Image 1 (cartoon, rainbow, N blue to C red):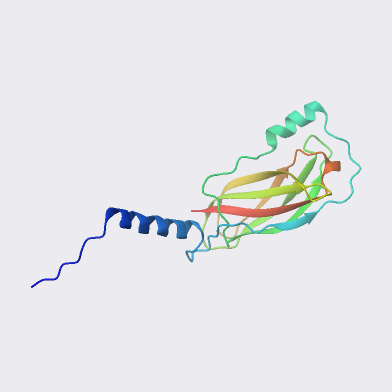
Image 2: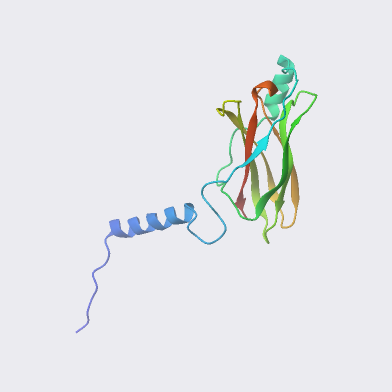
Length: 166
């Protein structure tokens, strides 16, 4: 006599599939993909700078990015090699500039650097980003994040890098 096992219900199959998808998206898989980015802090020296003019602000707004890409997550193979707050003497004004490296063996489809800026009380003023595509293994990318806040309002920043694996 053959023993037959009861078939799992559709609800149970869907629940198991959903739990597996959540585990992968939450970074529980062992492929170097995480869920929460780790930020490094950066300092801003006391600045004696003028605010942008209306025309300069309009030009800076066309460069400043605040829309994140889909599928971006922390990746072990993309690292920030260096970063610093730089006050440009043109319409760009406040920026954070540096270098990201792909230290892994594979191409990264999209790389995104995110910068959060804070005032002297520690309150977050806003966040900005810069992004690039197709960072091959062993390559580096020089980024420039344009920040729209007045230089006199910015006391510190923090920064992270994320990516989309190819």
